[in-house]
Image 1 (tube, helix red, strand yellow):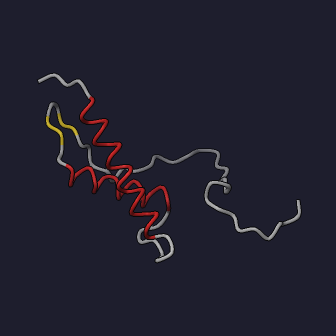
Image 2: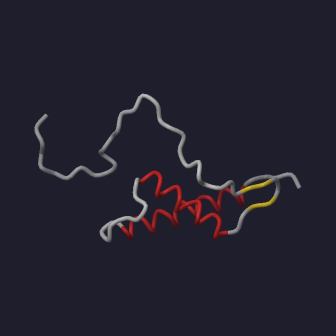
Length: 89
């Protein structure tokens, strides 16, 4: 297949692997029994997740805005999840 000269974006790039390794083992559990971490803990976990998935510890200046927006989106989704869980006291 001939190259079109167009840049490959992340959504187009696919990596084939026979086994996907366990990911994000460094992310702390945000729920212990009925206790849930605060927003700071959720944001820290979101940052670790986005770093792991993107492969960037620190994104380039060109990617910083997107990186920050996605960290916020993941933290928001985590907060929604935690608020929606039915936990036993």
